[in-house]
Amino acid sequence: MKGGETVKAYLLPEMTWEEVKDALQTVKIAIIPIGAHEQHGPHMVESCDAVLAEKMAGKLAEKMYPHVIVTPTVNMGVSHHHLNFPGTIALKPSTLIAILKDIIVSLQHHGIHKFLFLNSHGGNQSTLNVACTTLTEELAAEIYYAKTTASAKLAISQSIHSSLFGHSCEREVSEALYLAPHLIRPNKITKGDIQPGGRWKQLRPGEAIQGFYRYEEMTINGCIGDATKASIETGEQIVEEALDNLSTELYKLLHLETECKYL
Image (cartoon, rainbow, N blue to C red; front, side, top):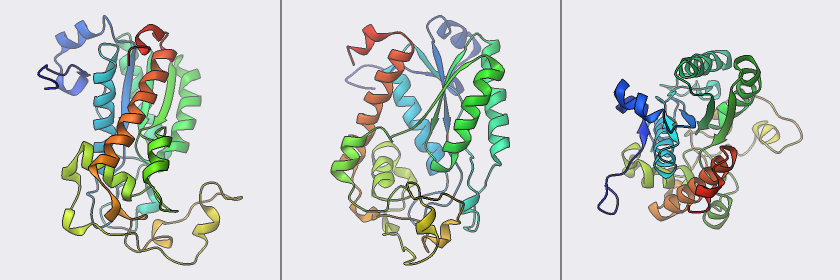
C-alpha cells in the first residue's frame, strides 16, 4: 500500500499468464534485474546484489506503470574476483550472456522487443556492454543497460565521502537499509580492512592501466568504505534520485515524453 492505495507494478514472477496477456497491451519494455551471489563482508548476506537489483526494478516498474514489466532476477553474475571468499558463485561472461539471450528470445516470442538490463553488480558491467552490443544486432532487439543507483550523482557526492567505496560500504548498506534491511547483520557492521599496498591500486577504474585482481588483494574482510556511516536517509536519497533519473531517461527512449513531465 502507498498513500492508502494499492501499488501497481507488473512483476512477471507474481503474475498468471492471463494477467501477463492483459499487461502486454500497454507494456513497452521489459526490465531484467541482474545481480550476483558473492561475499559482501561480515555485515551483508551474499544475495545482496540480486535482491537490490530486484527491489530497484520493482520500484521502477511502479513508477512507470503500466509501461514496464519486470522479469525474474538473474541472481548470479561475473564474480571471479570474489571467489576466494567462501560462498561466492561466479558465472563466466559467456554464461551470463547466454542466459540473457534466452530471456530476450522468450520475451520476443510474447511481443516484447525492448529491454533494460538493470544491474547492481559492478563486475557485470563490461559483460553487459558486450551483451548489449552483440544481442542488439543478433536478435534485432532494442537493448539498454544501467547500474541501479550510479546515476544518483548528487546524493552520492553529498553523502558518501570515503575515497574508496562501492562494495558493502556506506553507500550499499544505506541502499539496503532503505530497500531490504534483512540483508544486513547490524551487529557486524564495520569498515573495510584495506590492504595498504599492492597492485590493486594500479588497476582500479580510472587508473592508466586496467586489469583483473582478486578482492582479497584490496580488502582483508571483503568490504571497502565505512559502512558504520550508513543510514536509511542516505539510502532513500540515493535510491529516489536514481529512480527519477532512470524513469526520465526511459520515458524519453520509449517516446513517452509527455508522461515524463509528470514524474
